[in-house]
Image (tube, rainbow, N blue to C red):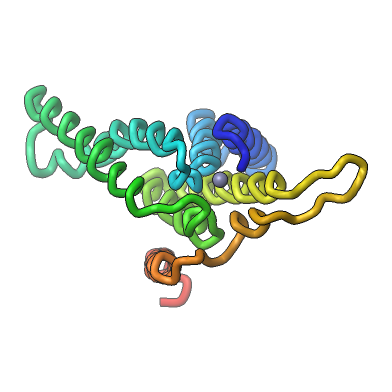
Length: 216
Ligand SMILES: [Zn+2]
């Protein structure tokens, strides 16, 4: 397993390549803030599979970030039900922080096993589609770039784990060991978690095609 810092660097490098490539191939489609966001999303994608990590560091960092960003994303919906007064905002953000940082994060820690379904291609695809939905208010181009960024960051993570799981004997060719094939895979040892992720992926892909009117 590559270290947390290595995955952050891996996601960031892929993000820079992706943002740079986008800037050169599609100039003017995304502004500077959006290109920076694509780079950051790729970095986040680069640590997502390690949410099941035994050390808990990626989960702690992501839940801290999400407990601030997720309620901020929801503000436009909350505004329809309650005016955004200072007293409402303080209760809203403290409650959201508590729910995400303690309840959701505790649940994820409890139900995941390291190198389980989070280290798989379908999970990374699901995260990419979710990013697309999250950024669709910013337009289809930004939403697609966000989805591709999270997916690319996740795949970078899985590839890095696979490379790290090879035994590199001095002067010889790399040899597979017990961890080979446990990251870049299409299913987990648990049939239940595999079925859940594939069900969510099919439902998300179906909705994605529907809103883009690919075949409806
Ligand atoms: Zn990993």
